Image (tube, rainbow, N blue to C red; front, side):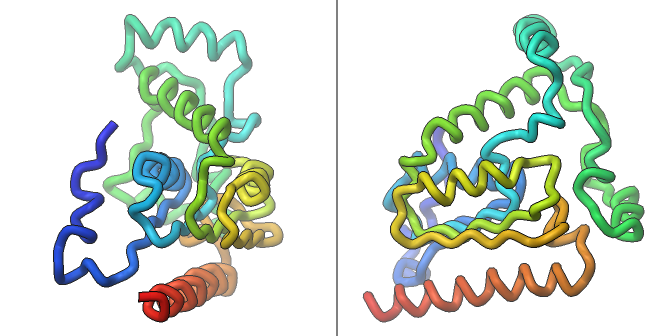
Length: 209
């Protein structure tokens, strides 16, 4: 799989001297890791917010159902019959912020298509098997009460990643949507941790250039 456009910052002379960082939240965390594994030398670091390195066991149907749905995906890939829980309740700790998700017009609110669900499982399994191949500087942020993506897998990523520059921030009682669904003070803390890490690693890049 190619990622056209992701190398443009390195090719454009205006941006070539600037550090380049990957950022991914939830499923985007899986995408960021896939990009890094595809382009291991192209980035100066990655920030992963509740990354979907593995889907929480509580969110995955029983194994027999998974096998049946995987087989069905070969003949009915677009069918929306995958059983899912309400991610709003699971992801947003603050009730008022959870209610606001109803007004997000670009949010997908239907059941996932069969092929989409199968590819998500395959991708997270592949990432879980390649954690030791992650080599770039890492900032991993995860809520300890997250039931959508398992915080224990973020801990495994932190422990198994080959990078010598890695940091794991766990937030007590926080759910999945660290940047949108938590109390304001938690969201502010998360953003402060991200900005502090970026400032530090941008300075290191400038000093080594």
